[in-house]
Image 1 (tube, rainbow, N blue to C red):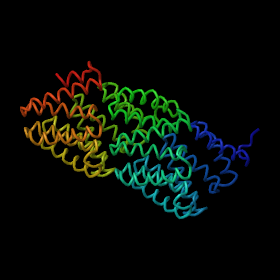
Image 2: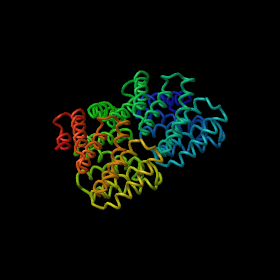
Image 3: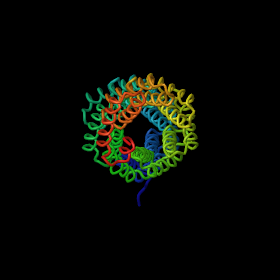
Image 4: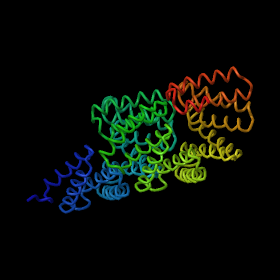
Length: 477
């Protein structure tokens, strides 16, 4: 009979827990950790450093499982014990502090997360030096936090500092290096530097597939990022193949249908179906994502609010304008509370409300929303970011509707120049501006320019969707 409380067994049990967790076999990992914890608490006491290691690692596991409140309970137990036994500046204590920072990011408590990360970074730099792996890992986490806060240049500084250190210490294909590379891909995506984003994602994907295999959750995260990038580049068929066949199927198999990473892939597939005009599929995906996120993260988490916002966009497209307004206002209130009035997610919802008010004929309110969004995007992202250009394009449409044709022309031409440079001449967003300019030039009596826009739109939409696609027929009809 196995003595589960013997010293050799609980050491082995904890080691197997680590092994199963690293292999994404989370159910077996939990069994091993719990056996190790029971043995260590009985043999060594609840505040022994070995017991606290198991408590901390159970927190990591519950994060992997998306059980965030249970993870917080484990981390707080580990932190209290480690501060008492080892002191606040011991590296093990700082590891739990850093883990709490990551958890608070997942819970949307970003200021608490920043406080934890800064505490961990200062401790690691003091104890281990600026180039130690733990210091670099904390820099990477701070980069992610600043990205979530919309402080993109500060995020880039953190990521580049971490990447430089990882490459020197571990080489370009180590999993820690690849994590930072993947994060830089996401950041460049946010900044509208899409070719640089693609380069980072492809570097991360090749390395992760080789080091971890194609079905590891880290590999799938990069696959998911590439799917989003291809969607924004207008490569919808490639995005659908990646988003569904690889990312979502892989997450469901590894983590189950209600894990936060699975729900992110579901949400992204909803966005893709929305872009393809498959609105029933989009509503089904968004509904799945929203129900899961509300349960796992709560109604006010930023990820939940993003799904609420996208449901608003979907209802807007379906002509359900009152329901769309309700979704947008719920998302805006949540974003303003969680992230502040000038965060890019807040501004995206402001812009969406501008579109809705325009369709409702509330043009003064629409103009107020667009101008707020434009000012915020220009400050946060610069004049040539895709979000900024969307706000410029929307102002052009508003001025067109108001009969202010010269202002409309100025806005449209600014949006077209930026979109063509950033996204290319055949991207769907570029073609939207081209089609709008065609109508404006007709109203201005500039028929040669209108015909040039018509030919551009006709050629570009045929390339993007095929000659018989409904968007193509609608745009040139």
